[in-house]
Length: 291
Length: 177
Image (cartoon, rainbow over all chains, first blue to last red):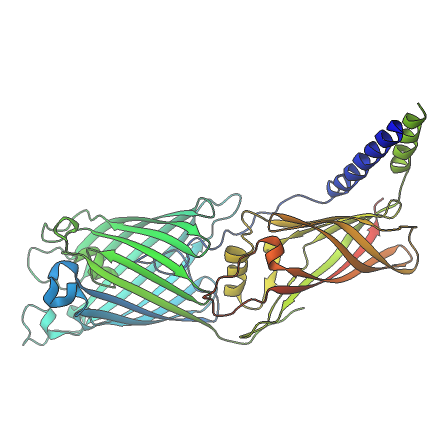
């Protein structure tokens, strides 16, 4: 009896081995694949991520920044006062996207192009690289040195250029470098530099599949002491179609020129602004079904 | 001694040149009816090997290769539901019950472990096996309950995924030479 049991045990062992044996006959050669979902949204906090929209996707983006938290009870700690930017983004191809927006900060209209130059692969290419170029026109007369003067179009214009380099280290951690050049055709005072160079660093850590913690920091190389470096902490909450981004920052602007080069708040002084971004994606275009 | 002989005999049965078949094309399709919009995707990168002698059959499905109509949905499927970076493949290793060898057309029940999202469930899945000339085809339709495989459905999503998804598989095989 014992022997029969033994035989049966061996038999079942062989049987199990047989299936694994079959498993080993499958082709396991893994082709290199594109690494996706490095970031959940096209913005880390205020600045861009390497992410571009998929082709024919339209994103409606609402950015909101409240007043300074240290403004006290009369201002309801900043909640009485708000700046807003409304934007539309559209994926022309999977790699090229265009966007426009209007901020209440200096009544600015901005437009930009974002192009994914390189995609991180599971083997081979270690990073995703995206180029970003934007143009912004401030239309608020009070944002200029002399509100009564009729400034020319080019004097109202500023530019931002970024090379975004990101690596998704694992499903939770992604880090990004953002070398940035801001050019303003006209600056407020003679001391201000027309060009500001910064090397942004940032990243995200995903706590759950849908929630991540984000950091974004833009140290500048050549700005005057009147301005501080923007440091922002945020949380992304993704609900399928929507991404909610809540954050605290010493910067209040929602375009690159503003938060990279014209931040005045200091973390140590409590000049902090609570804000949020909401984006809603719409898939446009004909559905293709090839099965 | 007799037992040992028996074991060798049994082993011999497996070693003997059992005809094995390997998939040359495959289609794994899933469908889930949801209030906002139906969710469906198809995968043509799956593989299978079938031992016609012993009735053993194995499947391997690269979960991140499901193609959706909407890319964003595909991303959410991979990132939020299936966590494909941690659980890249789904497998089914099964033994066909009461297997008596291939015939031109037959139904069979495959009993074995279905591993989806890192959780293995013992399942009995009924399917159709047909043979024309050298080609073998396997067709099956079954239901996966998300909770069986610890696939979480958040409460605040805008396209709710149904708790059950219907999976249709079609595999075509050729003999391994």
